[in-house]
Image (cartoon, rainbow, N blue to C red; front, side, top):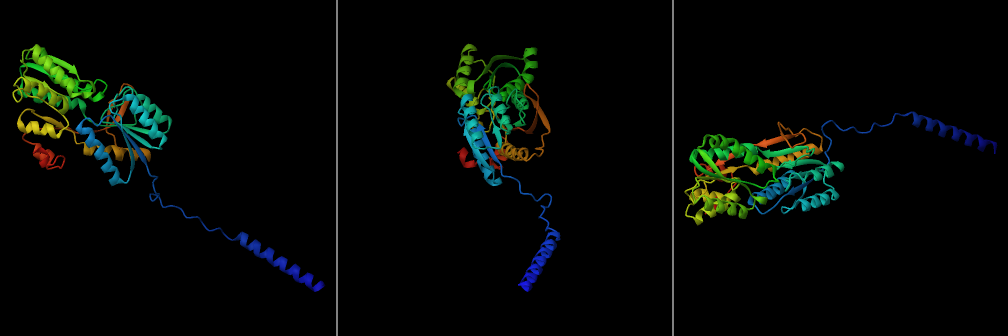
Length: 348
C-alpha cells in the first residue's frame, strides 16, 4: 500500500511538470494577410433610371447590365417611368434589399434630394448619373458637359442660319441637364439676338422631354410666324423628330436645319436623309462603365478620380465628365458605325 502511494505521487508530479512545460511553449503565430492581398467585400449597386421611353435610356440599362456582368458586380435596376414618387419608393425597396451604393439618374432633380438623404442615413453613397440631384450632398456626379452641349448645338445652328427666326426647344424643367442645355444655347444665341441678326420666336420647355410637347410648340410657332423659321435648336433627338414632323406637314423638312442629341438610330436615319442636320453623341458606354467603377471605388473608400465640380445649389459636387461629339452626315460612319455603337444594318 505504501509502495502504491509512492508511485501515484510520482505520476502526479510528472503530470504537473509536463503541464508546466507545455504552458511555457511559445504559441504558434496566427497567419497575417500580406498587405494588398485582402479580398475586398462584394458590392451590390442599386441603379435608378428615370424612363425607358427614350432609346438612350434603354441603351443605358443594357450597358449597365453588360458592364456589371463583366466586372462581376451585382446590380438592382429600377425604372421610375417619369414618376418622382415612384422613383423614391423604388429606392426605398433597394435600400431594404441591401444595396451598398446607389447610382441615380433622377426624374426630378429637386425631389430626388430626399433620396440622397435617405441613402446617407443608411450609410449608402450616392452617384448622380447624367442628371444632377439638386440641393443635396451627392457623393459624385457622372455626366457630359451639358452647358457645352447646348453651346455646340447653337454654334452649329448659327453656321447654317446666321440671320432670321430661330425656335429654341428645351427639355423637362425638372432635369438639371435640360436647364444647362438651354443656358448653353442662349450663351451663344444671345449676342446675335442683341445685334438683331436673329430673333427667338420660340423658347419653350417640353415636359418630360415628350415629343408630343415639341410637336405642339413647333406647330404653333410655324403658324404664328407663317412658316418663317430659319432654324430649330432641339435639345435631343426625340424633340428633333417631332419638330421635323411639324416641318414636314408644311413641306419644310430638309429646308430648315434642326439639331439633336443622343445619336438615336432614327435620328441618324434622318441625318442621312437630310431632314435632321446633326446630333450630339454622348458615349453612354463610357459613362455607364465609369459610373459602376466609381461606385465600387466609393464603397471601398477609394478616390474615384473626379477632376471637376458642378454646383447643385448646395455645394460643388465632385464630377467626372465625358466629352460630347457632334455627329453629322460626314462623320456618322466613323464615330458610330466603326466604334460599334450602331450597326450599319440598323440604318437600312
